[in-house]
View 1: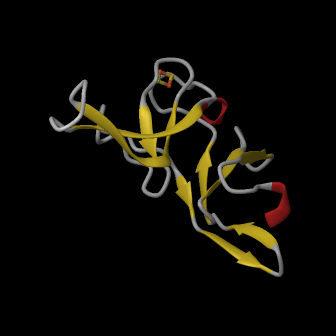
View 2: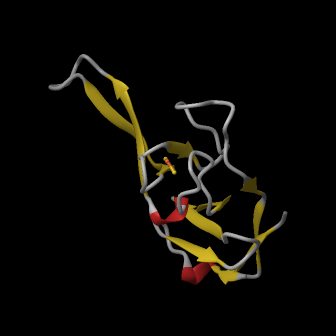
Length: 113
Ligand code: FES
């Protein structure tokens, strides 16, 4: 489906699997795969950007810091964020996205449904 070289750390690739495609993400050498579909209103989730998670930290100016850089995908339509590893969202926990197991074999990224 994709080679490891095609998805370097911090990058992603949408592969044509299923109705909407599957986004494959490389986060610091770990691979994740998610459906390219947002459960909120059907937005093209993988067209969004990855970021970390903002958490409260009173020790810094502004009172917040970003942690776990690159581990969350944000939908381009309304910015709902989903954790790549689990597919869960803090916005509406019962609406998680589909995730797929990923493994690497002989330099190839293999996604299984
Ligand atoms: S369609 Fe994705 S956040 Fe609304």
